[in-house]
Length: 244
Image (tube, rainbow, N blue to C red; front, side, top):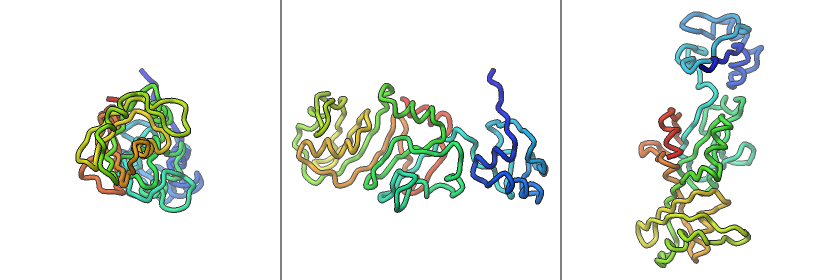
């Protein structure tokens, strides 16, 4: 049986972005930290960091944020950038401000470009992040593409061939599956994450992607009731769907 990790209260809360250790000490002395409904005044105390801690600890009367190891699903809006540093709206702006100060940091699992919307995962679990993006995992990603011109009818065979080459690259693309919706709309499922891959694939067939929206990763689908800019925490069963 794995040993339950422990942490000093001030170190834990500081790593979660609540403030410095000194600020946590002052907050505790003012009665702002409670555990199991009892004031916790000694922030040097070590406590077990168990999965149920967010239901037992409160900070200024509010439930503790999720502990490390969380996975966030964001319905990424158009115009947001998957970066920590670039100018303009960032996907991290959709999350609570203090989460930008968490350690380990929250990072996107792969990226969606500024003009692509839809399902975006973020996590502070580095091991999980690398499992999802590893080429060995072949995690499927499904995009809905709206095109400037009608499909020719040959794209499906080209994409599925495993021989398609993109400009400037020397390795062919892995086979991808095309599902035609209308003559100017299709779903494309890929297992790689090359730079602007979907847009470049259609461009190579003489078309242009006007709108691009990611709907699915593995067996995980973007919830219909999650509006652009909204997010949700995934539970263990939902995380497992990514690898289906």
